Length: 122
Image 1: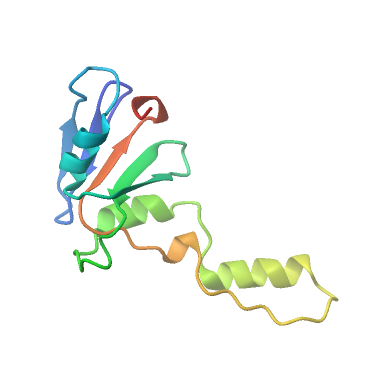
Image 2: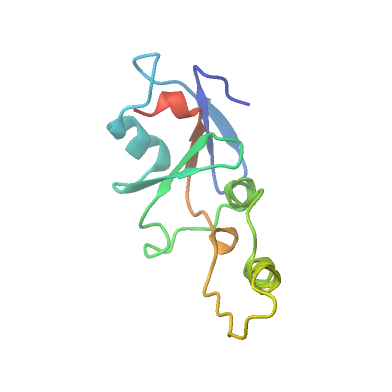
């Protein structure tokens, strides 16, 4: 597990590798590209407040689903069916159709994912 001075990369194989920013404070953009092995990143917030840096174009580039990173990302997020039930409960008595096309819980992380404390990305 990473601390506030390091992060870790979760590889699609499930392997986790601790990584440290070169400047000992925060990860620079080029470092994030290197760790995630891509040229376009997306930064998502995990339910515990940490950041996960992922390949923004990974799905269109047909990268392998990263099961461990996806599982970590989905903690605390509702699935489509859970979202639909919550909406129906919240708006009970109001007649309408609920159509949920997708939620964060249905989002798969692909390729490498860098996980670190929020303070390590500026």
